[in-house]
Length: 96
Image 1 (cartoon, rainbow, N blue to C red):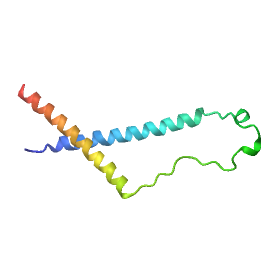
Image 2 (image 1 turned 90 degrees about the vertical axis):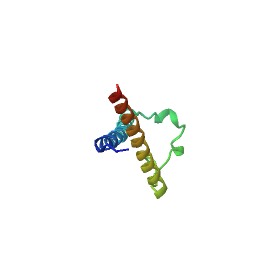
Image 3 (image 1 turned 120 degrees about the horizontal axis):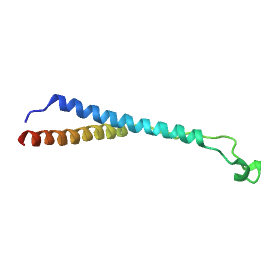
Image 4 (image 1 turned 30 degrees about the vertical axis):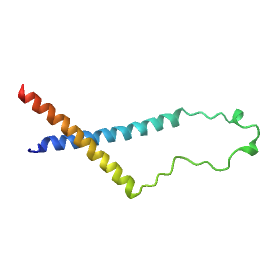
C-alpha cells in the first residue's frame, strides 16, 4: 500500500484550517459577547457593600504535557480519518 503524499498534505491542511476556524469562531464569539454585554448594576445588588472589589476576567488554562499530547493525538486522528475517507473515495472513483 502506497501513501499518497499530496493527499497527506491535504489532510493536514484541512485539519489545521478546521482548528484555526474553530479558534477564530471562539475569538469572534467572545468579541461579540463582550461588545454587546450591558451590565445591570442598579438592579443586581441591593446595596453597594455587596459588590466585589476585584473582577477576574477569563479562565485560567494550565497546559501540561498530557493536554498537549491529547490535542496532538486528536489532530493526527482527524487527519488519518480524513485521509482514509479521501483515499477510499479516490479508489472508488478510479474503479468506476
